[in-house]
Structure formats: structure tokens, C-alpha cells
Length: 256
Ligand SMILES: NC(=O)c1ccc[n+]([C@@H]2O[C@H](COP(=O)([O-])OP(=O)(O)OC[C@H]3O[C@@H](n4cnc5c(N)ncnc54)[C@H](OP(=O)(O)O)[C@@H]3O)[C@@H](O)[C@H]2O)c1
Image (tube, rainbow, N blue to C red):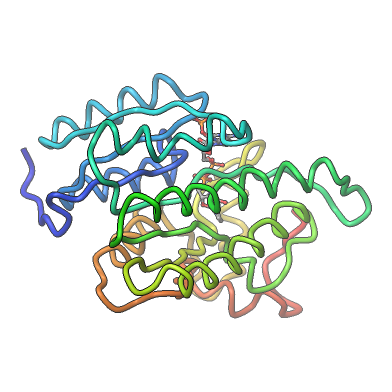
């Protein structure tokens, strides 16, 4: 077994949308710090089983929990199921998200509602359930570096992330002093559905560090936040400086 620094030994975490991509990297990073992890997923059954096996291989507990976060009945019991399986949950990472395209021209209330439901309402309900079962802990919400500006090609999505950003600050105040609530805002990390690696590499040339990030960069920021004793209500941009240019004339092309 690899040598691990274990700053989270004895802690139990719940990560939503844990099966693939950034959620997977966050789950593994928490486990490498010694946390047991409740791995939430929706449709990625094979991937979540593989991830659970990998975490168990590190000598930690992993439990897989399926739930459609847009189904109120499945959403409301998720933290409780994690707690029943592992014990008190002291780390919650709200990572699951949808990223559909729409514009101010095409936006419909149904699309906005669905984005709000999965990207903002689900984190709110999970944070509330989380706080009901622990006096101390950390919540981390995954935003998007474009909350520093707009995303004219994903209007419902970015509006829902703005709600989540406000929720982060609000719940940091409401849940203090026992629970710290923070956010990580990734930039160019992985191509969204329908786009290839070349798309991300091309856009990367427009950001200050002129390169893309890795899921592990995002995970490192999450680990920093959940191991910090004195940071709350903060957002860490993991975006190579992209947020600094979000509204600049030569900023990233947000429509392509
Ligand atoms: N990728 C990037 O470069 C980037 C950039 C900026 C911000 N972010 C943010 O970082 C986070 C992770 O990004 P990502 O690209 O890795 O996410 P992703 O692959 O788009 O989605 C993560 C997971 O969300 C789950 N999910 C979607 N709808 C769900 C529902 N109704 N119920 C339950 N689970 C649902 C899916 O689980 P299943 O696979 O199990 O169905 C999916 O694997 C997101 O919050 C995203 O907005 C990412």
C-alpha cells in the first residue's frame, strides 16, 4: 500500500456525483487522507463499484449510495443513509451537477428549475441534513470559475451556481461556529459532454496560466478546505487565473 498522510483519519465524508471525473478525484484524495467515504452516484454503477474497491484497497471504508438528486424522496434521506452506513458524517462535498446549454434567447423555466433543483436545491437540502446530524464539520460546494462573471451559453446552469455561491456564504454564517462552509470554483479541467480534449486545450490558451487544470488540482483545494481550522465562507478558484479575465474583452470564449 502507498504511504499516505492521514489528516482525516477517523472522519467520514459524503461526496455527491463521486463516480467519475472531478468527484472521483475528490473522493480518492479524501480517502488518501484517511477518510471513509460514502460515494453517491446516480447512473455510473460500474465506475462507482470500481472506485469503492480502490478506496477499500487503501484500507478505508467505502459505501456506494444511489440517488437521483432531482427526486425529493431520494434526496432527503441521502445523508441519513450515509450516516447509517459509516457513522456521523463530518465532511460533505456537493459535487454532482448538470451542465446543459441554453442562452437568454432559449432559456425556459423548466430548464432553469432543473438546474436549480440539482445544482443548488440538492446541496441546500444535503447541507441541512448534514448539519442536523453533526455539530462539527466541513461542507464544500463545487462552483464554477464563471461565477465571477457570466456564461452566456449556459444561462440556467450559471444562475444555479450563483445561487449555490450565495448559499455557501449564507450557510457559512448560519452553521457557524461548528460547521465551516466553503466553495471551490474550477475552471478549465475536463471537457463537458460533446466536447473533446482539443476544445479544452484551445481555450486554455486564453487563461493567464495558459494551461488546463487536473481533477487532482480541484481535489487538493477541497482537501485544504476540509483540513483547515479557520477558513469559512471562502471560495478558492482553481482556474489558472481565469476568473480575473472573465469579463475582459480577450477573456475565455464562453459560448464555444
Ligand atoms: N469539468 C470541469 O472542467 C468543471 C468546470 C467548472 C466547474 N465544474 C464543477 O465541478 C463539479 C464536477 O464537475 P464534473 O465535470 O466532474 O461533473 P459531471 O461529470 O458533469 O457530473 C458529476 C456527476 O453528477 C452526477 N449527477 C448529475 N445529475 C444527477 C442527478 N440528477 N442525481 C444524482 N447525480 C447526478 C452524475 O452522476 P452519475 O455519473 O452517477 O450519473 C455525474 O457523474 C460540478 O459541480 C461542476 O459544475 C467542473
